[in-house]
Image 1 (tube, protein in one colour):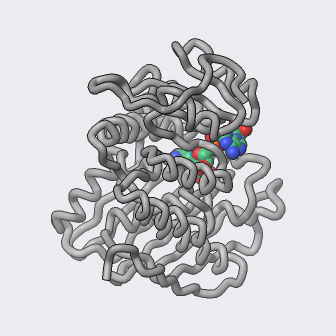
Image 2 (tube, rainbow, N blue to C red):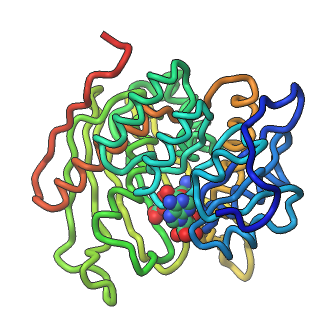
Image 3 (tube, helix red, strand yellow):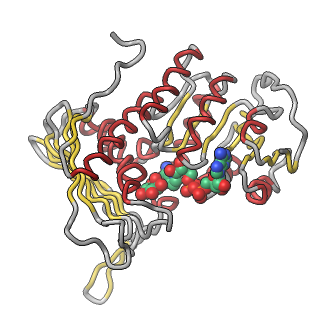
Length: 351
Ligand SMILES: NC(=O)c1ccc[n+]([C@@H]2O[C@H](COP(=O)([O-])OP(=O)(O)OC[C@H]3O[C@@H](n4cnc5c(N)ncnc54)[C@H](O)[C@@H]3O)[C@@H](O)[C@H]2O)c1
Ligand SMILES: O[C@H]1[C@H](O)[C@@H](O)[C@H](O)[C@@H](O)[C@H]1O
């Protein structure tokens, strides 16, 4: 249903040089952040439509953006006049339907993580993109656009530290949403480390284990927070991830690579450092929107530029599938306490 803005019409080809018209699905925390970025930070794009079942949210977000349509039905946004591309920022379980609808229309998509939470659904998206005949899906694993992560990857790729053997990762959030479940520690949070490790190392993940302390944090019954996730790669690297969803002090994402000739660490400090009265101290970002603000800027700039030239950027639909497969194994490992081996499906187009 259209609740404001211009009526929908048949999609028309974008005139050369015209800004890319983007439909944003989901007007929550990430959707709002991406809309502001597309509207005010990134050039070459305009927000043409915003869709959210919560019509007030869609309307509030679309208000003040010239010609931006607000709708409650995602498909109405895809079919709105002036829409050339789609940004999906709805909850993970809604992603598959939105991706398939966008691919059916030949529309390029930037989809927030997780691309599709269940591996079978993720493979359906990979297949639909294959049928579309060209790459159309970019997945919002924004760490790939973070300057520190990019420097670490360049160092590892150049083998300046020798061969990688271990990655130690810490992923700490201030507090989890009330709807956050124990599974989400893996599928929503450690999903980032699964993607980042595959990308940093250029290796596939072959097995995963999850360890829990005997008691979780006080006040978070049923969540068993923090946990330690350990996984292995086909290049023989072992990765450990501390996931702490309710740390209570801030947002920290840290990685240390241990290689045969040295080590490298990222994610230490992101705010003001002070020296006073015989002590030093620093700030800790409180959330991902602050910690990764530059990464989101670079991600959206790269996506708009790539889309305008008919390409994709960052994580592909295959990367989205691989993360989903590893997450599913991680959740099984969490439930059973067992080491769960992982085998990816055959990759389309590769023998
Ligand atoms: N890359 C990151 O760092 C990062 C950070 C946070 C969230 N995320 C991801 O972004 C997505 C959104 O998360 P969020 O924190 O903004 O959630 P949110 O709960 O704040 O917002 C989700 C919004 O989507 C709307 N919605 C529900 N079903 C919909 C549908 N079918 N179509 C369109 N809109 C729908 C809801 O009404 C809500 O307004 C999730 O996939 C999440 O994992 C990514
Ligand atoms: O959805 C969020 C988001 O992906 C953040 O980047 C991550 O740190 C959180 O753990 C997760 O819950």
